Amino acid sequence: MTQTTDWLKVESLELEAQGVAHNAEGKVVFIDGALPGEVVKAQIARRKNNWEQGQLTEIKKESPLRVTPGCPHFGLHAGACGGCKMQHLQAGAQVAVKQRVVEDNLWHLGKVKPDVLLRPIEGPTWGYRYRARFSVRYVAKKGEVLIGFHERKSRYVADMQVCKVVPRVVSDLLMPLRALIASMAERDRLPQIELAMGDDVIALVLRHLNPLPAGDVALLRAFAAEHGVQWWLQPKGPDTVKLLDEGGPQLAYRLPEFGVVMPFKPTDFTQVNPHINAALVGRALRLLAVQPGDRVIDWFCGLGNFTLPLATQAREVLGIEGSEALVQRSRENAIVNGLAHKTSFVARNLFEMTPELLAADGSADRWLIDPPREGAFALAKAVADIAQDPSLAPGWVAPRRIVYVSCNPATLARDAGLLVNLAGYRCTAASAVNMFPHTAHVESIAVFER
Image 1 (tube, rainbow, N blue to C red):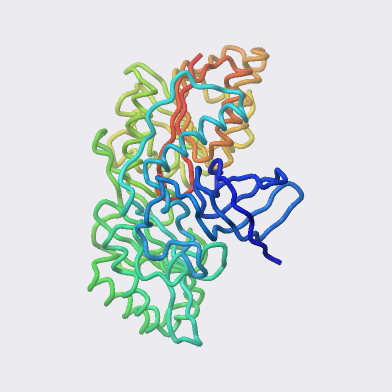
Image 2: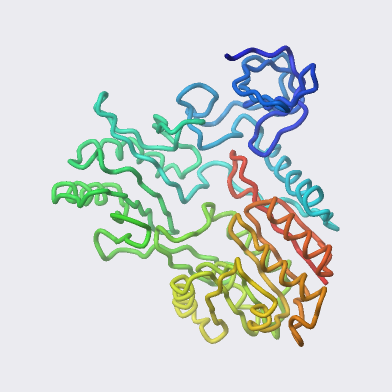
């Protein structure tokens, strides 16, 4: 049974963009849609011994940072799109919240306080998203197709007619795509369309559970010709993706500051926000301060997003990834950019690093670490173990400087605690990176020096 609270004073915003208050009994109340400084009422939907969670129903005192959401599909109502959580908060305040999240996590989880908090990396707040995974659902009872993100706190697909966080050209495709899928014979066996944009290409990956009949393929080709997109077909896992028709421009993005071009497949991991990615690569390399004679290791190198720009500055760069297939893709990108002579790549299980494996890859002057959400615990622990017992890796020398790019402030803080408290490093700088405006997702960058 739901119940409406008395008036509550919202004190802060937590990681999922919910307002945090305390009721008369002192119990924490998380309020979806509420902002710090507001006095609100909420309808409680969940109760636990130490906390309650509810949805905003009424505002008595409104925050000056509250704004009208830019997208008509954002909100707390049933059917609202769940792709964004913070459109009701002024964009600059969103960045400030994320900066505080980075600072708080470093201190409370890692007992690390950066010497300097750098200005957050931020950029366009609308039309920034060059990658997206849209769910597709054919609603037989209504005879219509829905394409979009899931509804807020639901498995249903939101009835999206526009999307403000993708480029306008993609938003304008949503309704034509709905009509296309509705006209296809396999419309009820097409669960997903993935967007991947390069600098010159809009790629759409259609997940299909059955082989497509000739008529459906003809419809896809006609749509591509009319709207200037590339269709890729994915019958099973990501490795099965294949371009429908060869020819045309290659899917790629550029890093002009370093003269690097990065070809990729639409199912490869690349950053969602190319504007922020370019700024992030630039800042990371400036903070790393690579010298022409340096040897650098790029841990979790991916397709070479940092490796190849580093190779334009360093004597030698070693890129390390978790799979041989990805390492091969990195080698190919190095060849495309004329940097094969300054780069090498190796496959390692980066979640099972040991001092012995660390020593096997040799010493380096500087490291760039860019792990997935799980972080780089095994790597940081191996460094800490050697610092505590140098006999574990005789002759190995720790890097003088490390730049750590993170997509999870909690695992960054955990790993920072090892580097600072056990491995002899100092955290000289850190900042938030607003890769996903209007969402609660926090990325960050930190610098460590011995």
